[in-house]
Image (tube, rainbow, N blue to C red; front, side, top):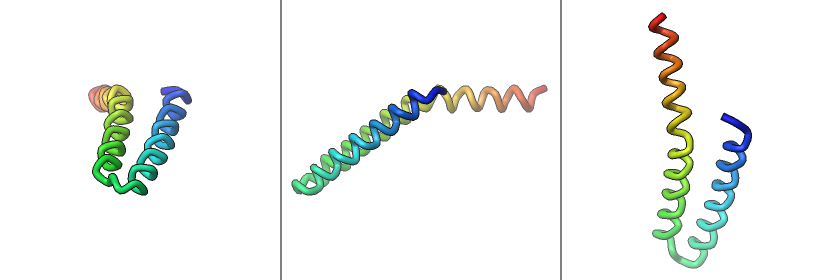
Amino acid sequence: MGISLIFRIAAVGILVTMLCQVLKHSGRDEQAFLVSLAGLILVLTWLVPYIYDLFIMIQDLFTI
């Protein structure tokens, strides 16, 4: 996991926050919720391989 992943997550967070604020102020709360949900799913898809590797490392640690 590199620093680029952290920067991508931060960029998605900033972008989603700005889009949600614009959508909420224009009265489109449902679309704002969907944008935030899409941002969360995108970040989780980036993190799933790292979480999987973490669990494999923990499993290997305790099976020694």
